[in-house]
Image 1 (cartoon, helix red, strand yellow):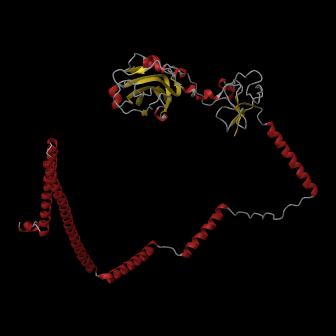
Image 2 (cartoon, one colour):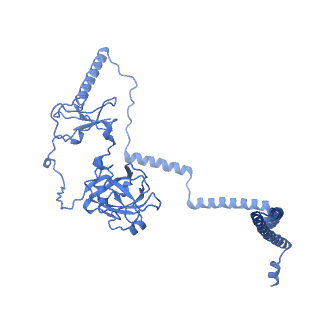
Image 3 (spheres, helix red, strand yellow):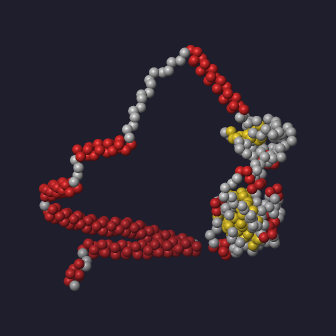
Length: 471
């Protein structure tokens, strides 16, 4: 007990720090009282002025000024007291650090003394090196290590065995160094032979060049595709239109192909201009692939208005009616089924530029049974941000997440009113992607262990060396 009480004894430094902190707290309490008095004197001055008593108001302001002077002096004393307290505490820390350094130095000296000094350490390291060398010598004796002479003899014996097994390799004659000599007549004949051979190669190369160019498609300025087809009609070099009857095997989508010469000039046989180029790739818009009878919209103001905006064609995209509006609040939940499997590329929509424009769109893949509560809590496949504009917007999606889409659930979570507008409006909605029809009928397949080429007929115009690509 005596040792414990002596260890916890309060030192003079601790008492000094405690006294300074108590004085600091008293000064802070005094500051609060002065602040209250200052505010009170100011209120008294206002009341006196309101009553028209200017003398009492001036007296109250003088007392306020005096209290403010005391407050300023108190701030200076408090700052000095806090600085002194910090200096004393830091000095105590420095004292403890110095004491620790002294203790550490004393312990380090004791350790060095026990080690016997530098001479003893060097002696110990030398003895250790001698012991290691002695151990290596013992290991070599025990392992029966061969000398260099023994190793050379082993190598010679190995070479002799290899020669015996592989046989002796006959020496090859040296290559002639002198160049062969030709007479002038022989040189002239060799030149004629080279010229004739080159002429044949050029003739063969010209014979293998393509006969006609069937088309150069829009967007392929750096790569032209030529097809050899001697039975195809001739093509006019400037209009890209056949001078005779169009071959039945040509694809119909070549009617709007663009021809580009080496200067990239455009010529169009049907009067087509580039004003139509603003239309997106309509073959990628999923319109006929939508299962309209099964399309459902929750919280729509007018029945089937969600289906109606999806039934608009691309030409009707700017029509204001029909329009989808929310009913009870700003949220809407639309389920869009497809008639097959879709790889979605983007979502195309048109909204209003006002605060009733939808803002956040959460997209779910193959979740037909969603309700508002589930859509708000469930992790969506992707979250899309809709801009506040009346222009038609095409918002791309992450195609890797929409590769096997059979239905889409679109949760319009909020609008641009930030909760002040309960109505959300949408006038056009479409989808772009690749479609693959789901085949639910049985398919008859014949597997061949080894295919016989005679059992398969070639299609006319399709075979080996039909086309050639020229970079």
